[in-house]
Length: 246
Image 1 (cartoon, rainbow, N blue to C red):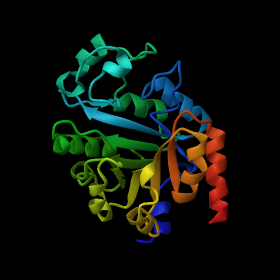
Image 2 (image 1 turned 180 degrees about the horizontal axis):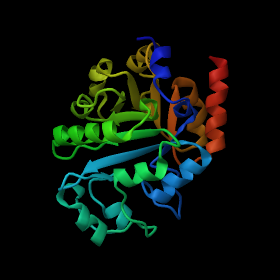
Image 3 (image 1 turned 180 degrees about the vertical axis):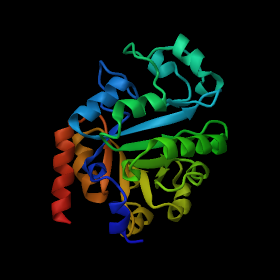
């Protein structure tokens, strides 16, 4: 499949930038419904992470431990939904959201980048639960881009655009890049010859852009970018400029 065809499988809003864990700030905690509402209001694709709770519910949070975003220790995979809802609150006072609650908030108003967060080898159960939820809840497949550092989890997802996450600390995972339709790489890997070659025929996203000095380089070497701490308008302008130059 050509790169153009692969890009056509994605909602065009993905190519205007992706809000990392929603548009969070000092008041609105990352991966919380307020941060996601902020992204919806400005029309930006949103990135978020899902874990599988002890009782099989998909929970939205970056870390497996709730400590950083709630102030209280607790491993998501060792807790039930009831325990999470009863005993934990995000730092902004909001509940730790489920994937269902995020879907209900968004109603596919903006497209979503969903990261599968594997914990202690649960890639099979996580992938199975995620696939089942996608099939039942996503109306337009163009609105979902599924990503993960664990290729085993991604291989359990079918019918949706899949992107392998690769970080500078584990560049060896690039060997699996051609199993998927796209790559999602740390900015330090953008000039890696394997990434450059891959991008000739496949989309590449870059993460996480949070400083102006990163922005123009990232926009010129990737098809879109995941950002935080930068104004949405600056992201759109940088990506639009590079689109015209190509």
